[in-house]
Image (cartoon, one colour):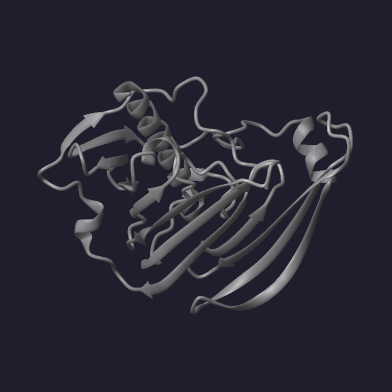
Length: 263
């Protein structure tokens, strides 16, 4: 069990480090958010400096099974970013292997200034550390260079501009995307249609609200609330003195974390 948990933590840490540099466009994928349904996408993309903030985060994922039964996973927490581009995420999750015995709280810190990302486990007082490495130009850390499959998926995607409006106290730009998998493409008898809606703050360069519905996975709702502009406490971005820092493996496990859907 300890080995399995360690592997999961390192997968989460690998995800955090990759997103701190250049992940897919913001907006959490429908099901693959780590063990808790966690939306790492809130700090996706290049390192953002000069736009500090803090906020409360919630993410709810509901998967409906063929017999009508449902699997619900929730994540709540606090997120922040300082003027130097360092990020902080403390999350409490229910559901999933790590939280099968009750809610579990974990903390994720990325520090592009020092070049490290951390996963803090409050139960063991251990901080797993990984070096942040920038991906090669023109590649996505999950998929590498775009290939024929990406082009095919783009052909079955319809994007709509939803304009600009105030969302949770900040101006945000909205976009909806409908993706269709044609009948027979993956053995499906009928077309599979998934939808997503995202509201993105250009000032803060983060998503503030997102909804995803993919019948193959789950329906998820992500939201940032109580958004506060200004410099967060510097202590958030430092590993507490009573934690032991351990270095993670030099490379991501071969299977790695699951890839997000094409954007």
